[in-house]
Picture (spheres, helix red, strand yellow):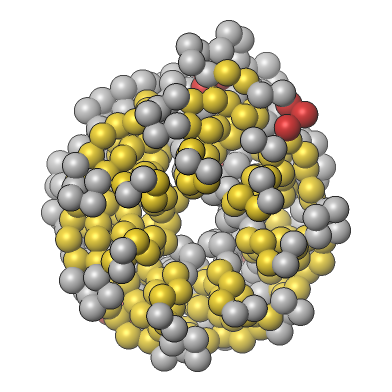
Length: 418
């Protein structure tokens, strides 16, 4: 949704709101950012939706499209890539759909030198859905590029569309399927409110919890955060029947390793609270932090009312506080992800900043008290545009991806010095 709102496909244009900085938003020099790689599409990847991870000083990640592995109607099935610190890129795997995966939309994780990830589609026959592209997969891949599909989602009660990163805990993998299950939530191709699953590294899986929607959570997003032996996460719908077309504004939830779920917070939306949390949670000083794509006190200036989003804090007992309300324009809007590093929070907004109509996006730093600093405003091609992903902190440098922009318009990997 954010990418569609951004309108950043072409050359950057002057943004009306990018003049004076809002109060409290210092700007770090533009020299703080550098593009490591611009995806070329075709045999190369295209549209990286997730942040890379760092393994032995090199970056590994996924692109949701590109690779020329079939899937002609959607510009190929996606890739796994490797990028050196100097920006040299190599494609490790090209997804082919069918029995292989298609459209990896989440970051990889490293478990003992083997990488694990998910694809939103693919997996082949046996998917209980009208979508012939498959219900998604879990895969492993070595750092040299040997890929293995560990699990193929079957749809229906067994789940579909795993679009979040996995979490490793006590020798098992835990993850989310954003659709499927037995809850009464509707999708175009899939039904169900999503679920949490547990899997062995060899691919034996079982369902840990099935979301119900309504006052319960629905559509889990962003992955699971392990803290004090429990999992914490967000859902982009559920929590209420009277928010945003009756789908609900989303929740923050807790799940034990044995599958007991508790809703910590139900978002209210509008100007009173955040709405549609995404990108998962970060832990700082014993509390949970996250972002909501919408909600908050400020309208982002569109032809209809759409709040610009928030940064929020939730205690483990469920007390919520809005840390920051985004303003749009030069300040940024519609945040998608946040991480904690060095006692501060770092995140991205795919909109706002300067150029690209509604802005090409920003990278920001925020204290737990809500003091915000803009680290970088993207400029659009040949610079990146629409930074949808979270950031990673490696050797005091932040790395992320922009969904589009770059030399070829197919997205970038970038580095920011905080």
